[in-house]
Every structure is written in C-alpha cells, then in structure tokens.
Picture 1 (tube, one colour):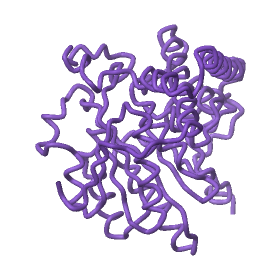
Picture 2 (tube, rainbow, N blue to C red):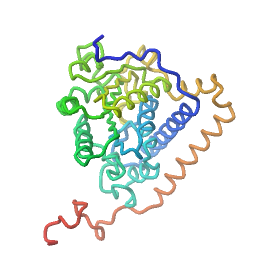
Picture 3 (cartoon, rainbow, N blue to C red):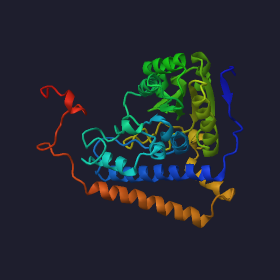
Picture 4 (spheres, rainbow, N blue to C red):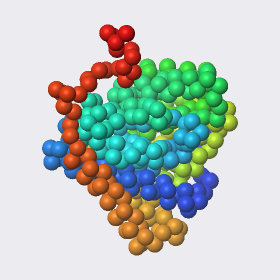
Length: 342
C-alpha cells in the first residue's frame, strides 16, 4: 500500500439521520430509474436508457455531501440519478429531459441524458467519458481566480473512463494545481462488456493514486454507511486544502450497460458475489436492524417516493415538445453573441 492510499475497511460510524437521508436519495434514484425503464420498454422514451441500479449508495453519498451553498460543483454521469437528486436536481428536470419536454433544462433539444444547470453548479453530462474531470477543473480554477474559497468539486467516472486520455490529463492537472477535487470512480466490473482484467493490470484502480500524487480510497460501493463515511472524510480533506481525492467504489451494475443490453456476459458467480448484492436492500436492512426506522415507516417512505416520481412524470408527460416552426433554435445561450445581432 502506497503512502497516498488510505484503506477504509473500517469506516467511521454514520449517524442515523445522515444514513436515512442517504437511503431516501437512493430510493429516489431507484424508483426514478424503474419508471424510466418501464417507459422505455413501452416506447415512450426516445434514445437509449442507462440505469444506475446497484450504484445508488456510491452516487447518493457524493451528491448529498457536496454543498451548493459553499459553492460546490458536481459533474454526474448517466448512472447517477441518486446523486443528481441529492445534489439538488429536481426530479421534474430529469423527467422532462427523458420525455423531450420543451419546459426542461435542455428544452427538449438534446439527448435524454445530457442535462444540467451550470448556474446551479451542475454542468451538462458529457458522453465522452472522462472529459468531465477537466470541466470541473476549469470551474474550480475559475472560482480560484475570482478569489473564492472553501469550495469543492465532484466528478464521477466508471472504471472504463479511467483508461481514457481525458481522465489522465484531467486528474494530472488537478494534482499539479492541488485542486479541491473529488473523483468518484464506480468500478462496476465492466466497461460495457469489457471486464476489468482487460482494462487495467494493477490490482485495484486505487493503486494509481500514488502515481498521480493524490489521496486514494478503496471502498465497498454497495455499503451506504461506508460510502457516506469515506466521502465525508474526503470532501473535508479537499475543502481544507489536501488536494484531489480519488475514491474507488467496488460494486456491480445490476442491469445491462443500457436497457438494450441483457448483460449475458456477466458471470453468475460475480452476480452471486459480494458486489452483486442490491445496495438499496442492504441499506434498508441496515436501517431496520439499527432501529433507524420501523417496517411501517420504511413502507411509508417508499410510497412517498413513488408518489413523487409519478407526479414528476405525470407533469412532464402532459407538456409540449419543442416546436420547430416557432422555437428559437439558436445554439448560443447568450443572444448578444449571435452573428448579425450587433
């Protein structure tokens, strides 16, 4: 183990209120994804659908522990519905984007996953995986140039994204500049259908932390308590000037790469292993065992979340799509920069 690596096999206990908040965001992510999957199969969603089933604990922990009031920024990916919601993205924004509503943040003009609100600290998702590291670097550098302090940036990536040049360049820059950056790598065992033993030769992706000169953590990404504990420590360290923090969460995608993929390439023994367990069910069992809530309270929470998800989609489904004959299709958000307006 290198000096820069921090093992987190025994996480610091997380209090009941924090755990339950994380579980709530996990439920929102799970039920939203379930609804999107059903709409996709019914032909109601145009384009691909990529669900975060199995990744909710890892995603929610980062999203909820970042603090927008302190100027934090967050670049989530396609499997981060739980983290997006926890960071402050309304479920209605997500529903509108998937259904192509002109009232959504992208006004129905982009793919169903490329949504964001940069003014609220969340840039739109980039399909070229690994590229968001440099985007967040730029946002953090801009804040630094303006004299702001106390902020942190979060960015997520999959194990496959760590093999890209963009990821390497971004993390290297962040390390050199000692940016307050959290890089959360969801090591879900496959880059689409390519297993990790064909992606990297080191024992774990956290082994790379020493080479970049950043702090590394390797955690069980299916354990909500461990995710909350480690992200909390890493965000505190970054906010206090310790530079980039690389957190690798070991988990398993519990669905295909997308809803078009049956994931038949995933071995049965991997599904039956430690990381094939459902993080939502594990968190629920932990909350019940610790007395954080009762069975009836758990069921009431699930009903509440389902109603919220259904309400969001009910509103989005009744809204109009863009009108190509009437809408202003200018690509630039700042109208004063459009040619011919001066």
